[in-house]
Amino acid sequence: MMKKIIISLAAIMMCVASFGQAKKPTLMVVPSDNWCKQNGFTMKFDNQGTIEELPDYKKALQGSSDLMLVTAKISELMANRGFPCKLLEQEMKKLASESAEDAMLTSKQGGGVSESPIDKLAKTAKADIIIQVTWAVNTQGPKKSVTFILQGIDAYTGKQVASASGTGAPSFSAELPKLLEEAVLNYIDNYNVQLQNHFDDMFKNGREIIIRIKKFDTWADDFETEVDGKEISAHIEEWMQKNTVSGRFNTSDATANMMLFEQVRIPMYDANGKALDARSFCKGLQTFFKNPPFNVTSKLMTKGLGQATIVVGDK
Amino acid sequence: MKNRILTVTLGLAFLLTGVVSTFGQARKKAMRDMEDYRYELECVGVGAQGTYLIKVWTYSKKPKVAIAQAKKNAIHGVIFKGFPGGGQGCTSQQPFATPADEDKNIDFFEKFFADGGDYMRYVAESSDGSIGAEDRLKVGKEYKIGIVVSVQKDLLRKDLEKAGIIRALDSGF
Image 1 (tube, rainbow over the protein chains, first blue to last red):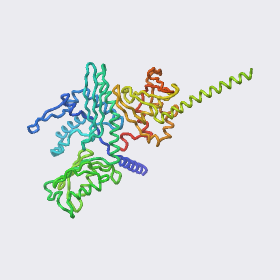
Image 2: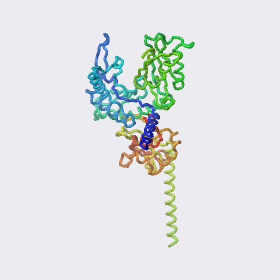
Image 3: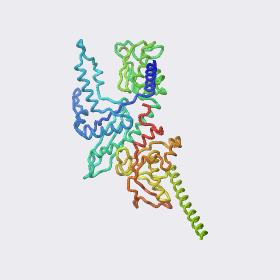
């Protein structure tokens, strides 16, 4: 009996603890496109007749020890501040092994793992905040210096949430790895001050997300259809007004077939104190569509903590 | 004879009291200067991991007091003032806390900055204690003394976070 009580109490405590904390964004250090191009770590592919050059992260990670050093140093310093980073190299290895496992996996009846084209597209190395690094070595006679740029980019809104940059002191003798290490040590604190400001803003004004609402062509109605004397789009905007922090959101696009909401500020916690992200927030919108007067099912897809797409009319 | 000894002893005692009192007043003045942010911090290089390497310029009529006060000023500056960048590849660094945080936690900081207080754990003189002529300036009636110190900023930040003075980067998550 006593054992049962202790287990129940422990379970309650764990629930309370998890409810009290907001969802923590994940961070990953990635070299910028500019750095990859400058150092020849790119791959070319033919995009319907247009040759495009994209960063080749695998080649960069295998070919540049300096990149490994910078990534490791930033990850170490961020872990000291309570934010262990996802490692790009490990994420890519994980994806490759997951794909291999999925390809080999069969059920006893011979069925394979189902994967839609959307699932395939979603299989990329991702994090909520990308720490993008760029550096260039400047030489002036025998002297060398490093220009270093550190940018924190919100993966969903595309906004720069933190940055630090500058050029270090020229040196006659220091080797490049030493200059790079100094640069990271020199800029990381200012970068983290801005990141802290971003988090403070998030706790005060809500997490910023993007919501896309689309319709399946099998749905007879569209967002201009009138229900209870108002277009469905107006009902959706009303719901957004009610459920966002201080009614903060922008209707960036609105047509009969789609709506795009940007700068949507969602609360960090729901009424029960449970942490919210784009997915849990949009579950509410899904319920809104499911209930009268709309009575329509919808499909919810999310990208990380900050981007959600609802397709109305089917699952 | 007895009278002479008594007079000399009393004279010496008065003299000693005067010296101690002047020194004590100078130290009090140095503390007031710190509270009024009357000191300057200058970055002298990118320190080893987890540290800042800075030069603290402290004002006092007595160089000894300035030297003793330098470490306190360095920690006070890192917490509440920050410092500008400049040469040696330094970038400007922002303070850990605001003056409002100081007012809110006045008891904590009074104890923290007391003589021999906890601030001593985070600062070390990076030279052998000797001060070069270029770092000992006479400005009006007082001295402006520059001392290079190394501040354990990561440890200092962590302990301030633990004490609830400043928020950790991951607080709330």
